[in-house]
Image (spheres, rainbow, N blue to C red):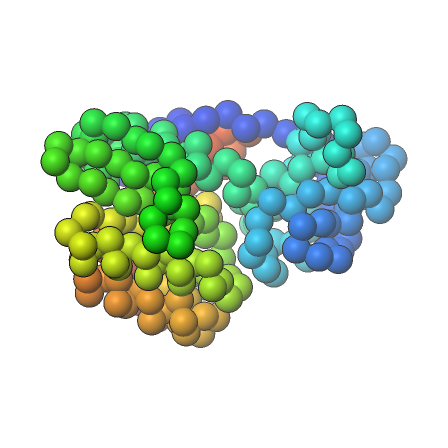
Length: 240
């Protein structure tokens, strides 16, 4: 896999803002200096805690909501980190992952025959069911925005849903299907990936069981620059 950027998709943004507070996981309060707007609610489409990205006076990128009847008129797109921006909107994760899976030069699954989104497996609805020859490959997507000491960590908040997905993939593997998880890492300062054992021991345990059962894990590194998502490389795992 060559370590060179490849353009994935254009997302864009409409305004720069300053973070004030986050009253709940779906809403942030921000100021938009260029428009003279203060204390406006914006939608946060990411269930993570984002503690090293959403802190008072950090800079944000916003996009206007397309639904005029929606209560929040803005969507949070990205947050400033060092000299760059970090995508913090999980609404784009599936499109980014589908782009990866559709490109055999990039995808860790190689050339595939078909990709079906939103397929039910057990008690869950997983992101994709991929067909490759006579193989059925269940694929789940997770976004990662937390980095500590150059290690990307998932999750950044306890996730019973994430654990359930790994349990379903483990069962699929034991039933002779194939299974994989794509971690979309949006932190260019990450050099390695690890499941976050200290944050969520339950998820960590499910991760270990899934790996032992043969589920594949692929941490994919992306950057967000000038409104464009770029793919960079597959990260190595380095459990901590």
